[in-house]
Length: 119
Image 1 (cartoon, one colour):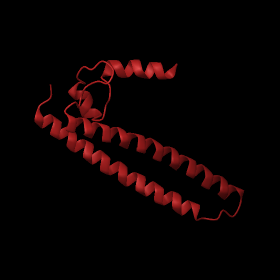
Image 2 (cartoon, rainbow, N blue to C red):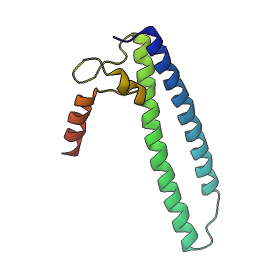
Image 3 (cartoon, rainbow, N blue to C red):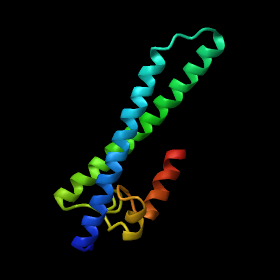
Image 4 (tube, rainbow, N blue to C red):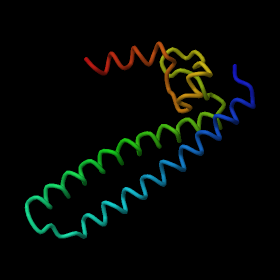
């Protein structure tokens, strides 16, 4: 399926992504804390603070979800079932894993999954 070298390269990429996301989440949480400590002087300031907070929460939520997917991928490497599509149980192409090392689905199943989510 995949060579040990490919698995180690992808694991390293996952660890780098994990660290970047953890850093981004920490920074965003710090910014939110700073915003919470600001006192808006008028309705405009209040609107800007509220909008910025909502945007930051949305970004953090997305990054936390991505971080969880990375953790799952790292666990799969440890368990020896990394790179297997969760839908069809066939190997995920190495090219796809190089683009998205925490991919859960092969290309075909990803498209099926996305279409079913839109309905």
